[in-house]
Image 1 (cartoon, rainbow, N blue to C red):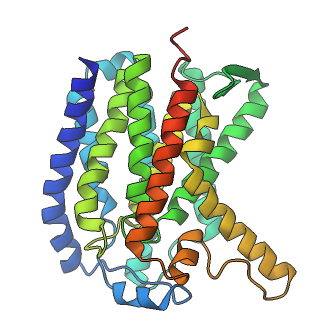
Image 2 (cartoon, rainbow, N blue to C red):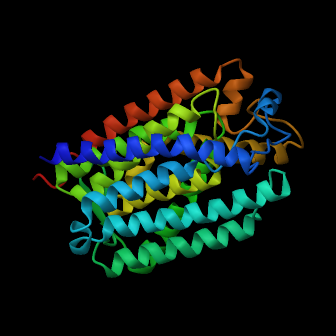
Length: 330
């Protein structure tokens, strides 16, 4: 039964991630791998200074082990899920290098923006090239809800794909600013991808999404407010890689618009704030950017921010599922 297999992937990753957390968090504390908090963030976040970071390692391992253990034979026939996992791992590695640099310097600056961008750009180009030559990607841009595809020249599509990937990965990274937020928002996105895999018969891709959902659910035991550990850029860049990687593996990158509505809103709030601040020489639209900090400044608790943003994502994912449900069922 497809659903049984997806549930097994979820459970294997869930329990493995939960177990890893019991050992990883004390280890990170001993290594003094504490998060440095930005001075320009909310003042009450200063109390989080020193909370262990790089906790994303636990759900990365849980997801990878679940996929390989349950799909080792299937991956030989259909390596697309393995491509997605490796792609996300590359982004996780970029995040790990960034986190390590921050911990080593005891400040909230790691890799420079140009360094991050070039590494992410290289990973995006490599991934889309692999999918293209593996026959897992077409230059036909599928439009959800409409059920039509827009044919594009390959060069145009590859540029589009690269920009979408780099933008999505950084958008997920920006969303990781409140205890449990990035994990809670990404959880329904992974559930969406798993459900699509079950309906369309893309079981290995669906299982990868289900495994990450299980890992995120377990991670929230440690990351929900008040957080005992942060996922760090190690985790958030990995999540960004998975979010956009699965969209391209299903050959429907435009689905990122509804399922990633919170990621988009967070990023736009940052862009608008900076642009308006520069244009008006110091005025602001939001009390603080990105968006989750604005609501905190309005008096929302971290738990309320997480619950609201997650509920919006869940509703958007349900809508997106209705919009693509019959793509391969006609």
